[in-house]
Length: 540
Image: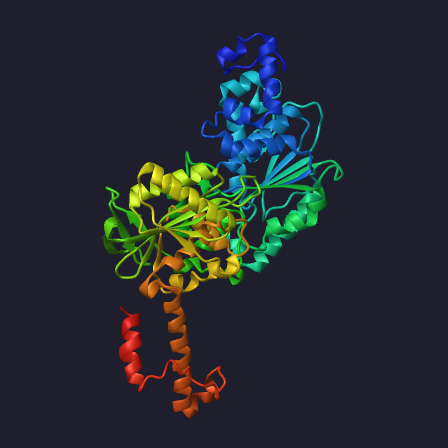
């Protein structure tokens, strides 16, 4: 670091002893978080959200890096602007190409770097050795920047390009592709293929292909996109960093994106787009067992004493007081506390007199049995549920004993019922399908953990919360019970058989055996009796 000999510098920094100023400058070269937040002034950066990203940039020595971060979390500021500034101050001989889907956006990124060099007083005080004294004597604009360097090259220190542009006779030591595709590329296979071809051609312009570096920064847009291609082609040489906005149902950046705001974005975007842009985990709807588009939403009134149910168009359907709901609690305890173990999960559901199931709470976390029991008594005080359901197997049985013992100690009555372990977990969870398909399941838009598990089932990493919800089916009554839906299914099947037998002309159009017999337990005297009876009950 040279002595400060340029104007417009931070006086406190410039008057520091040389060794202290040198230490700060070196820290900025080593620590991207310090450089971005402390020097460049990106004050909204946080350790939980941006710390791991900065550590990846500085700590991983792979030449090709794929960086996927949720939208609206400052990935461009951290990686494309601060990360490339760090490359320049580490080695002013770098020749860096910054690319974006739009040349205008690429120029804005370089314009932000230019602004730091021209007017960020702290940056100028710490890195005056790389900043030109007279910008008029070098190439200095939003398209190209030349910092102080010893070598003479045809390329500037920082260059820009849009994905429809071209460079002639230029080679680079580092390339940074920031969001090289937009929604338009996703809509057209031809446009996507063109972007991939251009990226492939550009990466052939590295000065030393064996040692130079490439960063691809963005958010996913589709199951097959340029990020998929990059990972496939460069996998042996590549390191990947990918995060979603939600981890264990909690926002990684609550200072800007609360769970409530994420819920609003999720609903507005739709599940597939949300899985791409905010979770960087595109999902194929063909392999999803639970159609989250069938979900309806509710919210609490301001006083917290009632719930407001909304139809699928977002219009208020009805308000129901909490004390008018038939509330039950399903508990799915995990016997271990290791990082890899399942989480303890609790589902609190209130059923209206119109047979609508409202998921009042969905909770899942790794915790001690004491913490789990304390949570159950907290729920008891808040909702006064009719029953607490716990599976009657091994560890769950012992938990039931301790819950009852603690209830006796506290002088509180908890009705604990034993739930049956009904086969495979996946089959249990699929039992939610009729409830969702008939529009009778309501969730809080901010219940991100539950919504995520539903959307990812059966391929998701976790399913504890949705499994606890599926256990509620054993405690539901009337038209929400699994037996009721099984009966409807049987009735519809018999109805189709009956129609086929009574209408020979329909036989070839039906996808059932024409000789199949009607269930003897379902033999209505006439079809009109069926419509007046079963269907009338179904539509109440």
